Amino acid sequence: MVQPIAEEVDWQKDFKMIKGVGVDIIEIERVAEIIEQYGKRFYKKVYTDEEIEYCLSKAKPAQHFAARFAAKEAFSKAIGTGLGKDLMLKDIEIVRDISGKPSINTKKTIHDKIMLSISHSDHYVVAFCVVEA
Image (cartoon, rainbow, N blue to C red; front, side):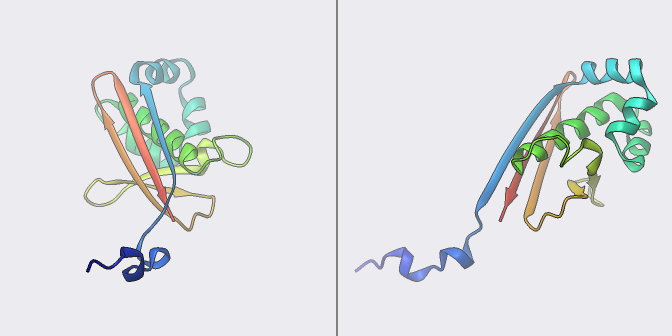
């Protein structure tokens, strides 16, 4: 006789729950135009010093700035707050581990697991974020 799975598994302990997902797509050219128009004012309002240094060190800085912008937007959607007075773009920092995998540091205390994926083509960047309890 087959036993019901609910008797064998502690659902609260053994399985994580997805609390939120967020996705954002942005045109790289749009970010390039904003950078050209506002330059350092834009950088300083949106990115941490480490993000600025990283992006400017790349052959295509606009692509990397766009990736971080999309990731910040995706994260804000995944945690359900969006951006505003309680969470600003600069409060979210996109970092990479030694293998290049992106992750998020934030001034907002988050006790959940955050998973982030960023991808790009020649014209667009997309970021996808999952927050798991």
